[in-house]
Length: 565
Ligand SMILES: Nc1ncnc2c1ncn2[C@@H]1O[C@H](COP(=O)(O)OP(=O)(O)OP(=O)(O)O)[C@@H](O)[C@H]1O
Image 1 (spheres, protein in one colour):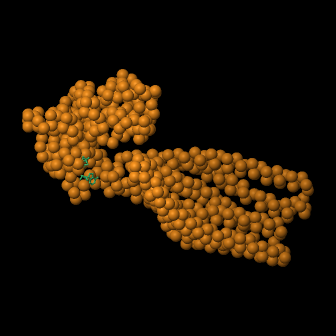
Image 2 (tube, rainbow, N blue to C red; image 1 turned 90 degrees about the vertical axis):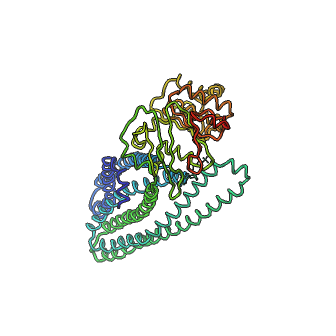
Image 3 (cartoon, rainbow, N blue to C red; image 1 turned 45 degrees about the horizontal axis):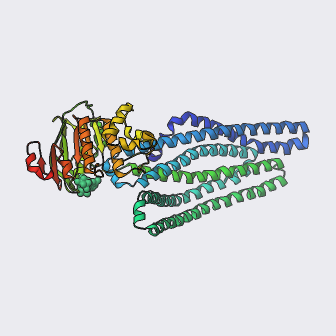
């Protein structure tokens, strides 16, 4: 119930639409009850005692009812599709928003393939199963109620006999439910792995080629397909067993009715027209009853997907940046200094940073250097507010804790070692995430300062060139320069360059750094680098080892660091 309540909120905005569809379904269901009764009237009254014109009038009414039902079905289908799509969009938007707000550790632990599968497949299952099931269920229940009423009106005793099968149908479906639910879940799990497989293998296509691992990959795929086949066949066997038992009971129903009905006709207790109408109603009764049983399967499928989404979203948040958002109150426009005061950070039980003191002043270029795994990127994550320290404070101007700043992202320009480009034009990549698109001159200046202008000018479509997310057609260094242009275009108080000039030659890197300092002289420029020549450009350098600051180059002790000049 809790799960259904969580997802019910997506149906709420569509209450009036659902009500309309529900009413139309009611009209359509009522219409479906007309024809068997008309048949009874024709057989019992019009053919023995009436005239041809009576027959025409009754048939005219029947055609009218058909037309109304067609109109209702048309409107229902259109509304239904529209609302279904809107519901998918709302669920996906919600999950997407929640996922993007998750802490970094979530993305380290969760596979992209699992997330996309969840967004594409499970959301689709929930929409089609829950939403369609809901309406189908409503329509089936309406039809069932109408048919049961008609059966009771036609012949109470015969109705009682024939209706015995309905609860039997429901009991059987209920028995199959948990088995089918598990079976669906197992299929979903392998399909999720298949999704991850495709994403991984396409992303790592260079590794596959260079290791000539085509046969190995084909084997992995075959093994996954084998698992899916196995589980799907088992599921098909279960589903078929379920529906065949139901079909058998449905087939037996009219036989019993014909036997008892025929008996009653022989003894004058029932008319032929009533029996014909009765069998017709009965045939219509089992269809919605069976469909209700299948609804059960649909609901099961939806529940499996809902549970998967709920499990996925319930993520243990440690160092949670999101947890601090409630405390975020201050909006800042200006600051002069960021200080780390005795900051320590752990991942689980493992200490990554210990008692770190750092200072980043306006107008300074600060280097962070140290062996791989020493904690440089962790400092960047703290600086960006992606993580929170376990101990110590990160302060702005020695007083305002960083986690209390609600617009911190507005002050940050982050260029990471793995550039992240989007499948949009160069211009859109550079303007990415900025509320105002900015002038063409600003865009040009950013590309010039990032030393990308010449490259861009050689492209036939210039700034309108479409960049794929992997930056095809561009060298690593060119992609890095697009990311630098993006950060420059944002023109922020803090710019962090996390080994993102590693693909550039020294002369080009130096030019870009000087351009940045010239165009943003008041910014804090933080540079993570292993290159002595890059560190030589910094006013201050922190050397980190095993989470400790082991040395510090400051404006006052530059002479001690001649090895990096
Ligand atoms: N999410 C995480 N969970 C657990 N441990 C982590 C996580 N992220 C980083 N670490 C560990 O923390 C330590 C510091 O990592 P960090 O990425 O800060 O190092 P780094 O100096 O930037 O390394 P590199 O130069 O190789 O990028 C490493 O030992 C790493 O294995």
